Length: 352
Image 1 (spheres, one colour):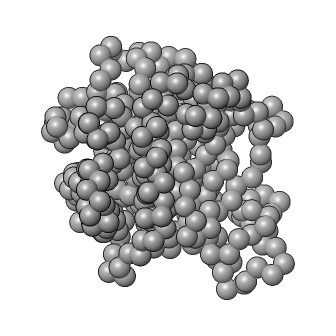
Image 2 (cartoon, rainbow, N blue to C red; image 1 turned 90 degrees about the vertical axis):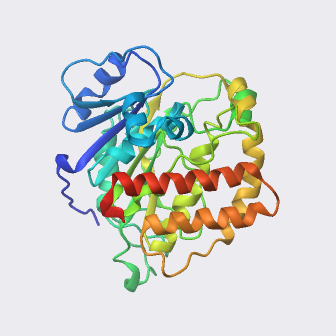
């Protein structure tokens, strides 16, 4: 049941969070793909060196000065430092579709040796329906060579809009810090040619390294929230988007949007230190054990009909649930979510 789709290049922003100053090799690797689109590059506000970007791209660069002007210095530090700088790109984009790929990734090759066009695959995932309410055992029925299997209800075959596409990556897989530390040589070499819709009511860990989303549908639901330790000193760089991902999945389920995972792959370069990540993430990983049952229990009110309303409701529920335990980390996350929504409504008046 292969489906034709048409998305104009002008409807797409590519958002890149720049954590390294020299983007020359990264940009050149992506040039055959990225050169068709408008690029938003957000420089980590803690990065001191000037960015090095080759010619041949339609690019807008945002720096700490832009963040301070838009959000204020305190919110810049709270919301947009480190990997979270990509969220500023989500905020200032005015396109329907956003593709976000980190600067330590280059195009992957498929199982036949051809370069993967990650942007085209994300856009295909977002343009055709998702099927969260009934699982299709041939995975995405709208992909080439696939269809709905025998027994799939005809009343559900129209599917629902796909709001979020979560790509994967080769080489360094999406492993947590303890697994990386215990298996430092482990690499992902398995290319699986498949896309599937994550079932309704099923949570999942999100990574912002390689994603695409419909900004008009999700608005501020992807947010920089769970960020600091109780002492306010260390960033939980990998826990933040996991927390955000659980929230966005709850929002998608409530609004009857779909989330897909699988293709496209990128190739993630060697960067970072698993032991150092473990030191930063360990406390956050333990807190996720409390967060999962909370998100599993959430029921949003019928009056919440837009993503912005849903996020405020989730923030309220987070605060109510964890205030009794005096859990300052989750309370702080709820406050950050509320501040993020205020900022979004200020920058994106149409979301009001």
